[in-house]
Length: 156
Image (cartoon, rainbow, N blue to C red; front, side, top):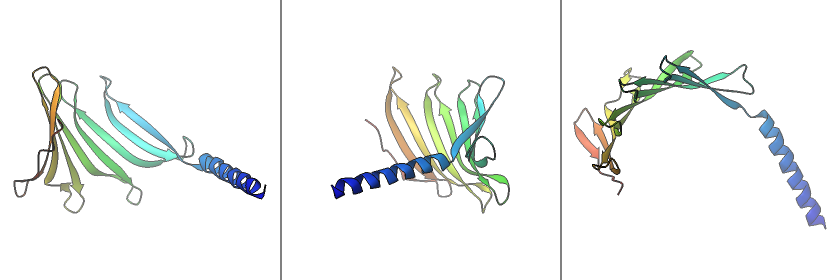
C-alpha cells in the first residue's frame, strides 16, 4: 500500500512539473517575407513566451533562378552583443533542364577572414532517362589544394 501511495505521489509531482514547464517554455515564431511572385525571400525565426518581446534567433535569405527554383540560401544567426546578423552557412542549388535538383553545395562563413570558406561540400544528384533518381554522390573539395577529400557515397 505504501508503494502505491509513493508511486502516485511521485507521478503527481512529475505531472505538475511537466505542466509548469510547458507553461513557461518559449514558443518559436517565424516571419516570412515574400516577393511579388510569391517566393519566400527571407524567413526570420524568433522565440518568446508570446508574440511580444521576441528574441531573434536565426534568419534564412533565399535567392531564386529565372525558373523560380531556389538557387541560394544563406543562414545567419543573431548576435545580440553586436545587434547584427552573422552569416554562418550558404547553400547553393543547381538544376537540370527538367527542373530536378542536380547539385547542392554547402560552405561555412569564416568570421576571421570575413569570407566564405574554401572547403565546399557537394551533393550531386544523378537521374536516369525517365527522371528517376539513381545515385547521390557526395564530394568534399578544398579549393586551396584542389583536392577531393571524400567521394562516392552513392545511394543504390
